Length: 108
Image (cartoon, rainbow, N blue to C red; front, side, top):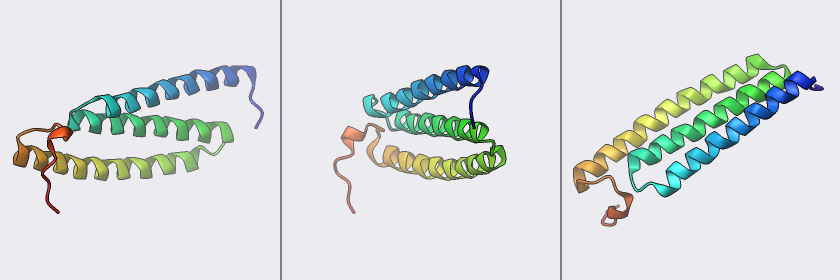
């Protein structure tokens, strides 16, 4: 599909936005010493991927497929966040901290 000048301009705005959101998510994961902030960073990364999938579906003319993939991604994201939230809650109850640097005495 050949992009019209208007679509090309919108495409570049979305790409810049997606890159900024992706960098924000990576920064949130790497810099934070808090497990909840790291989960928020993962959530931000997944949102950037969601917007990228929607943009790719729009540009290819296959919005129905993109919407299906995004809905599947949202379901997987919810399951991931529930399980990760449970792990963070367990870590807080057993260590009285959600700092990953203090999780050194794990057994398993």
